[in-house]
Length: 351
Image (cartoon, rainbow, N blue to C red; front, top):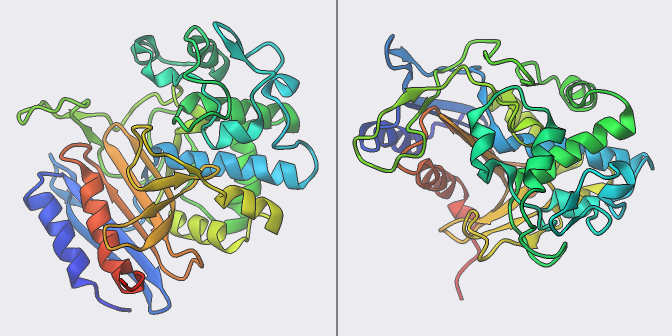
């Protein structure tokens, strides 16, 4: 196993200088597996971050949802060119929203133009949401643009993708994800939270400032949380090890036939959309150009008190998964710095 002192230093600095409660990183390549940690899983008990902890993965959930949709496409049960209206009649309508004009592909790559339901204040003032309710809230707002015109990230797209899966399979989304992804890959620490508010296994506490940017913002423990507002767009729980296995399977085509594998990694421009800089988005996954110039491929998620970044080389030979249980002082900068150390050697030579 190769030591990674340069990564350990970055993790230590993230806790010492940025004030993050705890952070872990897992690296796998042809030299083996390395796991590093800094800080604590619980600020009250002082318990250190550790391997095999479960945590909320936020929008990394989208890669699981997209995989199931693409498997159904491979099985001939639906087409990416099918309209939302065909499978969910009458659900996307009103205020300029038109389900007859939005394709399943446009849901998966966020080019539908639909309003992001999590930007509506009433969504966070209640619990126990059903996805249909959230879609209806989204459609009280006009769309951002005509379907296919641009990229704009909207969790609503993936609520609809989850509902599509349930319509086509006549089974709960969580069951399909377990049957099609978790069981074949042996992802024993990964599941859809659904209405569960507690994390099942050993886990770090999840600390959040609730997006308050002030230096002395109050920190809240949001470990136990209703995530029905995110559903198929962001309610899953996983581990660094499970995300390693899952991303490796996505990059190497273990879960999808070649045609659907190409669809997943066919990307659209995200420039000007107020999303992650230097990225292009596929179907639940994205590619990102690092400061060193190398492009990496993977998935990420941010929810209250939990940020996850999982990226790898296109061939899946090297994968880096980093997680922090605090959501302030821009953890993305730390994630990029870690990735830069691991992929700098593969950067294209300058001319």
